[in-house]
Image 1 (cartoon, rainbow, N blue to C red):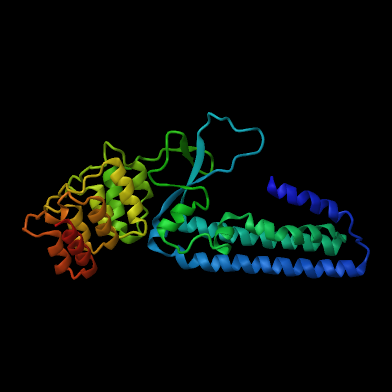
Image 2 (cartoon, rainbow, N blue to C red):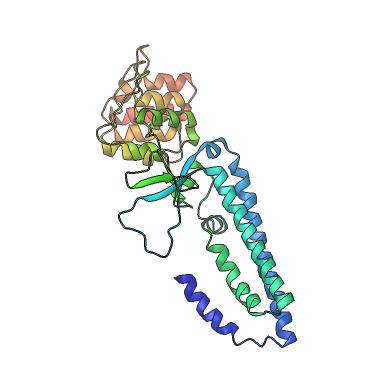
Length: 327
């Protein structure tokens, strides 16, 4: 609707142009060439930016579900399931960026041909005015050119939702995945234990969205079959950018950081051993009084002992200061 409000006055003004005046034609040509050149340079900048991050292992392996565009007519059935297509995040970003360049270059060729061979000047005026709006209308280009995120981490991309995408574990009963022919694909549900394993494997590059989306009050303290790892143990130790947000959500659901694994480690042991400053700070502040720092593992070691042994000095300092305040 906003784009239409811009186009209507531009179309009206285009009818007032004297297409026979050589000075006006020259001015339109210069303006059109300048605007389209700037747009193409902007798109090339976007492509160069995304190429730097699309080779990252987390982005190449990150599965997303991109919603199919809804046709304007007829109106979609409100009870129908929303359709998505499965894609790899890195490949999809590059596809959108290169697609924007191809469509812009194609539009330049068509407009130029119509002007040179048919003498049309309205197209030059329209595209000179609409070029920047068409570029900003692309969510990927707008996000990069307008600096809507500070980095290219998994957390930043997940929060931005450039394509209105969903990630693994976020699909609901009201969604369905289809292929290019529109055939429904059955997506195998991913268990909380698998999500825990994936989050741990990805470490500080992990996308914690799917895990958080599948945690409930009933499964928040789920233990893995092999080692008895819990969600808050992993969240406290991997050191992702949004550690605090993730742990706050887990605390709200009833996470118990005092639960121990097969080695006798609680969540603070995990954070101390792996040097997670954010995880340690959250545990010592939000779970003060639960005795996490006083729990010894099966080898008789406190969380502080692990922090010292691993030379995680900042973590050791946080535990010492918090312990001193409670004494």
